[in-house]
Image (cartoon, rainbow, N blue to C red; front, top):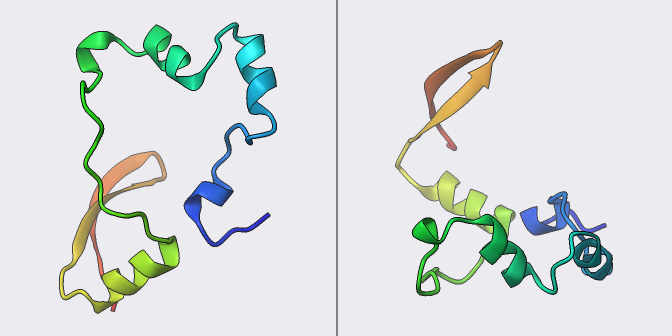
Amino acid sequence: MLTDKFVNRHIGPRESELPQMLKTIEVSSLDELIEKTVPSSILLERPLRLPEAMSEFEYLIILRLSDERIKCSVLSSGRATMEWLSYR
C-alpha cells in the first residue's frame, strides 16, 4: 500500500470493498448513505470550493517554510492542552 498520502493510509472501504459494504447496509450509493444518515439541516446545498489537493509531504514543506506557528489541541494523559507547533 502506498503511504505517501493520507487518503492511502485512511482506514475506510477500498474501492473493491464498496459494493459489498453498500449491499450490506442496504443502500445503492455513498450519496444515499449520506442522505439517510446526515440530517438535512447540516448538509450543504452546494459543493465545497476547495483548493487543489496536495500530498501530506507537500503541505509539510509549506508549513516548514512558513513563519507562522500553528496552535493545535494536544491530547495526552487524558488532558487536553493547547500547544504551539513550530515546523522550523
